Image (cartoon, rainbow, N blue to C red; front, side, top):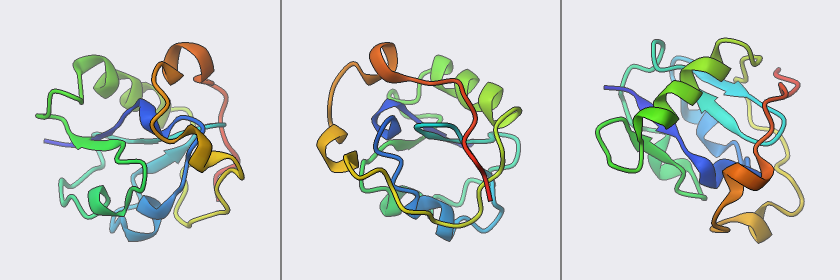
Length: 113
């Protein structure tokens, strides 16, 4: 089992989860984070830290195979992030907005550490 970041992270990107991860398995895109499923140790400490409630175990119906594949694909090309940064100023306004993936997902990498 691994944990998966899903679409509610898009444009929220709070990064509270990054600070508690004991294995640094988060990777940063321009407007969301992903978890590398091969590095995740399934501890789950990131889940309660996510204000957007965007992280799920891969056994949860919200973590579809498509989300697992997206996390794996982008964790392999985006830079690793190990510390919390300032989240987007409008992140709270985007929290819970439906349809963010189709309208706002960016495959561009973030800055990393």
